Image 1 (cartoon, rainbow, N blue to C red):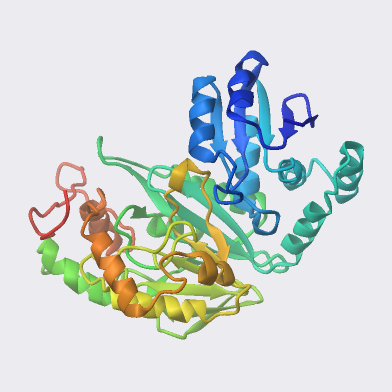
Image 2: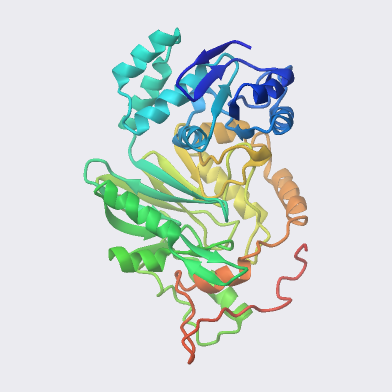
Length: 431
């Protein structure tokens, strides 16, 4: 194993053996970071083997599989977080060590601790060509809109602030209101994180957007509208979801007319984020009301498709349809192949670090539920898989809140709010 010291805490390396990893425990290392996708070469140990060796050595293990061409801001953030959380030495490796060095300098650059010139000089000092890092930063600077993702580990949800760097206008997409199902406690921790980012970057909020009424977390749209004064919006088919769940919850007086939002978007309707054009694409299948927001070169697809290594969303919720989901995804895949695709959940397969950005081209080529599939085959695979999945643990609490635009139930006479949970209404749901 060839190593290069990068900083007091970080050493980068080419591929270590299992023995190399186990021996790290005697060299004051605390963390092992593996940057190699498992299928990169046939003879590499792979993440599961490395994780087992790291655990045997008493090391923290982080799996951030990347190629130089596919690095996203989420990967850079995950690398920087792994460095910050260590209490000892870190060994980060890929095939040659180059990706580790690139992620290191990018993590410094995003915190404004290293300039482009310093990246070049640093690469020369360690004998590595780090020009891909400079090119990545240039692409990020030129891209419109600027997209900042916020990952919620509890619900595996990704929330977004999408902004125009020229006008400093922004939209918030799919914000999460924190809810602890064991205690019944709610909080605004993630919403406040979003507001802090907006304030720190001098942004003003134009819209608060939901892609659909979520089944696995509460929406913070209503709370954020109260804090920012910005209007809320969702797709116009939300009224169909409201009518469906109005009957399930047996609330005959509930107004199933979408009036809980400031605006209901029709398919094909346009809007803007500052000077950046936006468009709404009706994307049913996961739910009756799902929409995709295309803003500049970025598409926010939430529960249609996940990252290319994770397939697609389920289609067995009330009102879901695997055939409609397939057709919705084909519309999204018809966008230019370099369109950035931002998904709303990441379930971290094989324990890798969370990711949420891909491209249309990557989805076409690499997503196992899309590449080489037909509609009939997809529907067969999707429906068979859905039969094995338990319902999200928050589906019944969440929909009660989310068909109300994120409003919690009104307090009762004693000042306490109560959720209403119908029993035995989701027939055929897996336990």
